[in-house]
Every structure is written in C-alpha cells, then in structure tokens.
Length: 130
Image 1 (cartoon, rainbow, N blue to C red):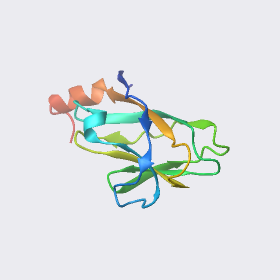
Image 2: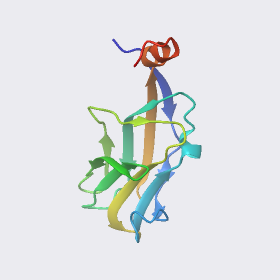
Image 3: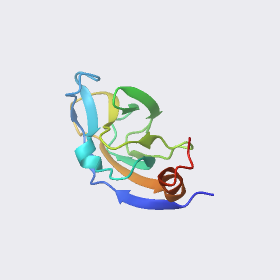
C-alpha cells in the first residue's frame, strides 16, 4: 500500500517557442528542474492540466530527451493528463510538453501536480530496496 504525500502543483507554465532543439518552431512548455523544485529522491507526475491547447494539436511528454507519454487535448479548449502509470522525476530532471503546433497565436498553458510515495522513500532510507 502506498502512502502518497502531495508536493502540490507548480505555477502554470506558459509555452514559448521551443529553445530545447527538440521541437524547433513549435510551442514547448519547459518545466525545468528549477521550476519543478523536486527535493525528494523521486517524485511522480500524477496529473497535469492543459489549457489553451492549440486546436488539433498533441504534445509529446518528455523527461529530458526521453519520451514518456503524450496528450491530445483535441478541440483546443483544454485537457487533463492523468497517467495510469505516473512517470517518475528525479531531482535535476526537466519536463517538457512538446506541442505539434507552430508557435503562433495563443500558447498552451500546463500546470503539473507532483507527489511522492513515503513508503518507497522510507524503505530506501532503511536499505530495504534493491
């Protein structure tokens, strides 16, 4: 049984034209490690809310340069990203939403919610994890 501790949300992140080199010319929400501020050994990205998504666009969800998921808000109003297997973020990692839409018009906004599993952290500290 997991004992989740909520790390709360991060401030809404407004996309800008990509500067990562992963999504040239398109919108990118860059939630850097400074923005995420993870101060536990690992945190789960258990939810994200997308608003102002470009109509018909999808986003690849990346941790660093690794694809972990995607979201397709559809009509452009907004969406909720609620993974059944939340990706784990480590301190120092960056999270990106790379949009399939050119960086024109209204940028998408992403708000992420993080948590950690107290039981996993406690077990690791007690040397009970391999």
